Image (cartoon, rainbow, N blue to C red; front, side, top):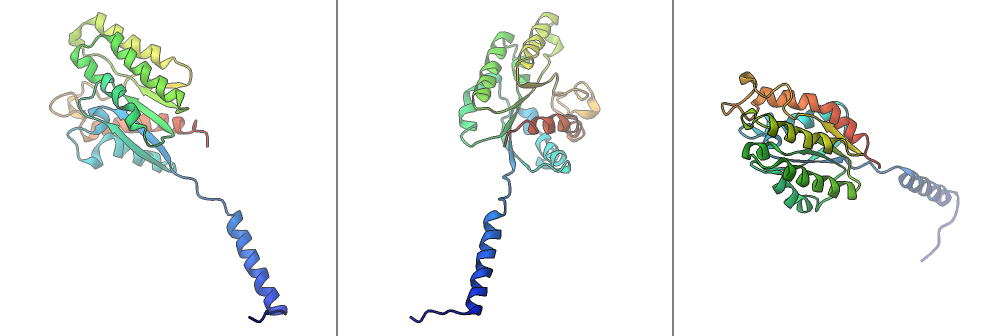
Amino acid sequence: MTARYGPGCSRRKAAIALACAVFISRPAAAAPLRLLVLGDSLAAGYGLAASDGFQARLLAGLRARGLDVVLVDGAVSGDTTAGGRARLDWVLAAPVDAALVELGGNDGLRGIDPRDTEANLAAILDTLAARGIPVLLSGMLAPPNLGPDYGDAFASAFRRLGARPGVMFDRFFLEGVAGDPALNQPDRIHPNARGAAIVAERLTPLVAALLARVGR
């Protein structure tokens, strides 16, 4: 093979070297933030079209703020805090950057001892903290028919958990929606499309603040 030399060859080599330098120095696009939504039927959008559910509305709100985020759907209808605790390791098989925890409604409906609810949620928060995953805990209130003592104990469990270092706390997932027939499905438990939109709109800035805590 005959070697080629001369000005033309030098210019070609210089152009190739410049193109390689530009390619190497160009920063890789950051991967989208992955937000785990660990919840029950409220977060799963029970009774609603997927596009009308809480997660779809939340995702739209976050993207409208310019956030590059994908949701990891860890919401299962009928789930209790014990159920969420039992499946957390499986849900975390793929990495996530932050987590929204919405559990406890079914504990209240079943009259589960608030101490058990607190222990299950504490274990979930411990697991997430051990992995360095920032958390927004969205709380729940007990049904009034269980009486004031149960209601106070239930709410107090969430307040204690929400006071943990590094945990963001939202007192009540259904704030502004619960008890309003115009914002709920006929079962008076699950938000309708309007109600889900209100919940998502209220939580969007809190979730955005949570994602701002993610260290990259």
